[in-house]
Image 1 (cartoon, helix red, strand yellow):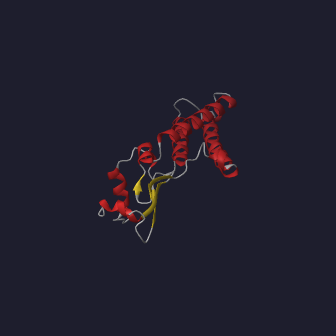
Image 2: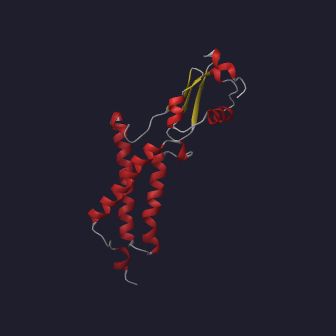
Image 3: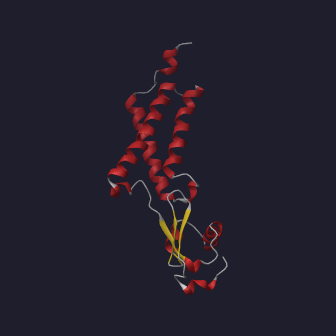
Length: 172
């Protein structure tokens, strides 16, 4: 067994770094466009890092098309970009909006926000289902409900109905 053949990268460091960078940034952009609900309980960035690390490490471990060195450089590149984007988002929040989505209101003052629901491809019955999962029976008492960046729904309730007109469907 020749350890040099197993560990030494078969491509240049710069090419591997550029491949990892293109994959990470390209998929980050695509996932940012797609929406939040596809991620489940994970944040899109978390999901992206997991998928890319597994994909990058696989061939090197299995010996299919690259060496462990190739895989290691790609894995380090993906993790590096994840840390850089988190740091940029923390340091410059406005710039971070390009990479990190904000919560989107799907209910405001007891009323469904149809434009946000269309953007997230959510039907009224799906929103009602999320309200039931949170134990909410009366939409008129919901001040705000948000679809969070990780795809989950958070709800801010009011003691009094914030929109008596929304009591058309008191039992969700």
